[in-house]
Length: 245
Image (tube, rainbow, N blue to C red):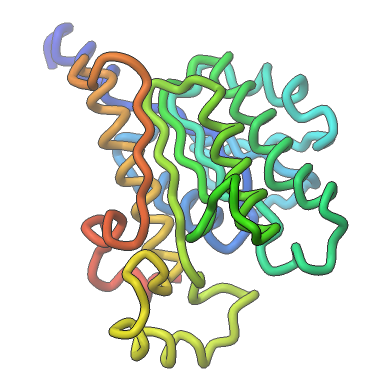
């Protein structure tokens, strides 16, 4: 390999930092990053030691979530892509609204600030179908605030992923995996259910596309925000992904 080719190869490899790696979608994201030939390093940020990932690409950083930005900052140096698959989801109905807002808005924004300061130019954040900061529905409104908070950080490319019901995870009854797809004809496409592996695949693949565009100076000038609902995520799905461990 020539020096020029080696330099070009280095520019098309990236380091990722992940918030929510121990969750249903986040865990699959990390596995996809491990499998990706473009990813050279993965930092997972957790609230407690898990030792869930033993691959040499992966390092685990345990932080106090209330000091998230400061404690993540040293480990975010050199990051290229930040991925956020973090939130309370189904548990929000049983929690005080300010606690939901702290978990869904403040923590992801603090993480993204640290990642951006460390060099990350690309970010993917998982929100939810129907997110809208003006919604009358409390959860949809808070998730809309989450999108605004992360958007304000100023990544070159931000992917906002709005899944409907996430199938294949510990919080969703298994029977829904068979029932909900049968109802797709009656539901607007943006609210279609999505398997956790499909969502993870879309977040990683779209982030890699955005990273390569930025690294090769092919990205549009200025910051861009791409909102991906089910129809926009579907092209990234891979046959057989749902059968993976």
